[in-house]
Each structure stands twice: as structure tokens, then as C-alpha cells.
Length: 334
Image (tube, rainbow, N blue to C red; front, side):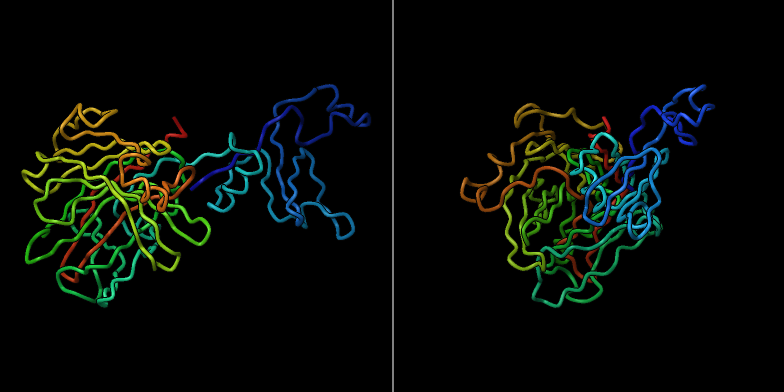
């Protein structure tokens, strides 16, 4: 979860060194002391080492909208994170790295955002954990092999990063069998702005044995209507022998994404800063390389703080996407 640690200033939490009557505290002097940060009902922020508890005719902490006691680390929601960031406390905020180990308590942190409507009765099931310790995504109802229009993001509640790196193991155990063309990958930035939702994704190509990894920018209305996207197809031929499982990794910094892919159990290629240095490692500017200028203008790249998680698209009731252990690293933490 995101955390907030209120500022520390010189003082004494159990006495007022500025009070002439408090001779003991004046004798020992000040020490680093946590400052309580609180927000009143008018949305004004206050910092006080000795906050007033308040009463109806003189509001204080008892009437506060938010209270963050000094000297403590507070777990906060994404909404509180945004509030505190806007209030100027960016240097006191932290969002830890997330290692997604597929257990029921971890799966409970994933929430679905539908990016399009299928039109063919596709109903996504909640993700499950298999005996192979991988997370599995499928449909609870709809087509058996593949839904043409079903596209879903599953966002992790503990992630709200600006720039970060993510690595996962992807295994579509029956991909390409009997027309099953499911599409899986990572949502590497998700935002909701002005009644629209945007995402940056990395995923396998939907067509069997087409040796490309797609990096895309997506846009839809909040209810999942009006879906459109633009993308760049990274040629990554050698990873497809054997096809699965393989590793996907991406670094996203503002509008620059670096991508690398490699066989599970083998060493990864170096990170690249261009499109030509390595077969399975590339880098692009999403505002220049992914789509035409008109498409870029219509589907702008989301930048700044955003969520992240997994994508599960074109599933069927018998078409499964599986993810291995996945690590989301917050570059804000260094």
C-alpha cells in the first residue's frame, strides 16, 4: 500500500519548549519530533506538533477530514496519495514495490476494468490460482475458444507509480490450439481522466506464430464503450521457439518504453535505448513510433502517476492465460 510519513521538525512531542512555565522542557531542549498533518472540512491543510483536539465552536482534530499523526507511518489509499501529493508532500510519500505471488490474498487485490464490450456474451471469471503457482484468467461464460471483443484490465490496488519497471512470466498453455487466440500481458500505466480511461500495455500478438510483441496505448470510455488503441509491433522472433513460457519486461519512463523478452530460465538480453541494438530488446517513443500523428493526437500517451496490473483479452471458457511471479518496481524509490 502507499504510505505517508508526516514531516519531522525540532520539538518535543510531550511538552512545549516555547512555554515559559515548562521549565523542564526548556532545560532539555528540542529533539527531532513528528509533526501531525491534518485537513479541515474546508480542505485546508495544517501542520502542528501540538494539535488542538477541537470543539464545535473552535474546530480541531475532532472535526478534521483527515488526520496523520506525527511520528507514525500511515498506510493510505490512492485517493489520499493524490491529495497529499497535491498538497506538497511528495517527498514524504512512498509506494513500495509489488511482487505478485499468486495466492488468494494477492488475487483479492486485483480489480477488473473492462476496456471493451465483447458483444458475444463473454463474462470474465475472477482470476484463480493453479497448482503450478500461476494465476489463471478465463471466461465464466461465452465462446469456448476465443471472444473477439473481450478486453479486460485487472489492476493491482497497491500500485500507483509514475515510472516503473515490470517483469512477468507469461504462459498461454493452449494458445493457438483449436482457434484459441487469447492475448495476455501487462498494463504498465492506467489512468482515468475526464470521463475516459487510458492504458499502456505490453502483450503477445493475438495471431498464432506471428513473432511480434505489441506495445500499445489504449483509450475507452469509463463504461468500456468506444475502445480504440494504437500500437507498435516489436519483432522478436527467437523467443517463439519454444513458444511458452517466456519472460516479458518493460520500463516505462514518461513516454519512453524499453521492452525485452527472453526464454524462461535463460538470461535476459541487455536493456536497449533504440530499435536496432538487440534482437529481443527495443526502445521506442510512444508519441512518435506507436501510431500515426493523427492516432497519437486522438489517443494521447498517459503520463504521470498511474495504476498497473494484468491484461486478459480474447478469452474463451476453455482458453486460459497464465502468469507467473510478477514484480512491479517503482522507479520513484530508486
